Image (cartoon, rainbow, N blue to C red; front, top):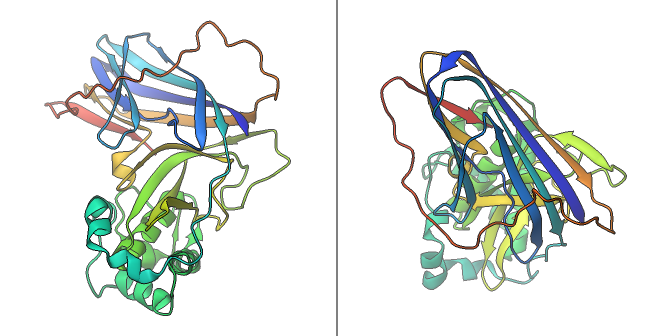
Length: 322
């Protein structure tokens, strides 16, 4: 599928801020199931943008504004081609998950992480164990966990805040896509399945449904789903928010332990202002016969550069976009 994606973020400050520094993770990755044709990030006020990859392999644009400003607008424009994703082998035995080499290769996705934490015997682990006790294959185990999450949560915008624990999430019984993903990851890890959080875009008017096959353009927000490591098959994707398959309508930005590793925007600003943010993602199908690329479009550099993380300083305020 050929898709054009426009992601606009507009930060407004109640009074001029002296400086703002942001890390932006909105550019899709290149892999065997998707190819970035072009990508451009524009910003107002205009400033130099530094491009890099983080520890998890996600593309990061570092945007720093060092003049007084009352607003910051970032617009990312991407053209991407996607392909169907393969399904996991149906007969992979559950016992294969215990292989020491397999576990060693995926240790970062087996342990608790800041947004995916559980304790042995708590309700997360107990529900996962009960849901999967009769599973004989890894695909059966994965399907059982996704079904358990969908039975435990209903989709409700605004029901949770960033940082809600899995226990609180289960007690509340409602959440958004990142909550469905976090709970599924926690349940999978608790029963020995390496699982990771996927940040990206979904070309669907309703993220709780499998997708509107007739839509030509939709206005949405970023989406989240999961990938589980299957012995002998690699990473296999599942969307617990809607229970549908992950395919050509899903566009991956990055994969990591949880939301905290791949937020679309994370940053700080200097001053005493309060900040408001508006964000919108518009996705449309691209014609099969494409025009010549625009002069401003650019390809992502293949060289990997690694910079230090943003630190904290006095009078800084965090701004983070879901």
